[in-house]
Image 1 (cartoon, rainbow, N blue to C red):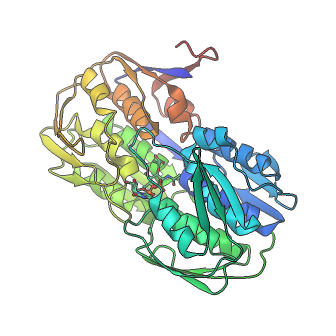
Image 2 (cartoon, helix red, strand yellow):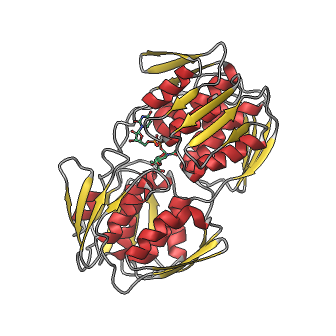
Length: 425
Ligand code: EPZ
């Protein structure tokens, strides 16, 4: 564990290159086991979730080498179908390994991922889909055992466009006999990146980015090389950091189309935003405008992973905003911490809607990061607050942001990370 110490009041100014996406690399690393050969993945973010995924691949018998931002995986000796429980508990999104292991070995054993700070995080859609593809699933003592003598293509409708369920089906169906059609598939850009990687190994996947994804089963896959798409949420977080501090920022190595759902809201809050080829330039307004109602939703809606950061921004708007979190049932644990910093936020009884009355200024405080994006939001609030802020439980933030304190310092912020190996901070 560690803590971020921030002295607020500095405008952020400067330029930052955005690295590879956490939510893109995780399903890609879950699929490298499929080709029984070499996968070379460039633009890999050095975040703790990447390292947990590397441990998972090693536990499955793969050889892994991480040099610079390139990960080379040799899955020719992958031998076990059991995902280590400690790793699944450490990173619930490692449930995405299920589909690849099942497709590779015809069986897979993985522990229940369990809930997290965002809510129950059910896996019913994943299990429904795998059953449709021919897997028998038994649940025993907190473990899920999937077995399939033969995986056969199927028509799978997702009641909710779940990102993880869409990805698990894509991986499970790669070798299935015949075609698998996913309707109401998730449309996130990370799904398109996964399709690109799978097809670079010789898979036959089409439709990613739409609600209709088709996977035609193939017999074998081969070596592949890929560069991970940029992290649109890290980009959105830094744009919001410039907005909340009244600064200016240019981000490079971004994909404009991925950022539009985010920049459209930052423009509504008064920011000026300009895209040039693969960069974006944002200038904060003198006064932040409220957003009457901001709803999160599946892509191309406003991303839930940016909700906490926009909540932080709107605490300083000159009026009243309302935010409706429609994707997760309790993505609001950053709100009491923002209130400790002087924000005026009322949370609905259900916890899914917040009313934010803008205040003149936030005041530095000691606050607790409860999850990845909530922690990032508290850092943003600290950057804008009067005086010093301490954000505890840095490990949440380190899951998805590579050296956020260094990047922010390079942009003019006063922030340090004090790591505490004994976990007493
Ligand atoms: C992915 O999580 C992302 N994680 C999340 O990012 C992101 O918030 C989420 O998609 C939505 O965009 C990764 O890609 C590693 P879902 P995932 O399945 O796949 C319900 C971050 O901060 N659901 O689309 O777990 C579920 O309860 C993280 O980077 C079911 O009901 O999200 C939730 O309400 C947080 N049954 C909704 O769908 C299921 O079987 C969205 O979940 C599966 C999901």
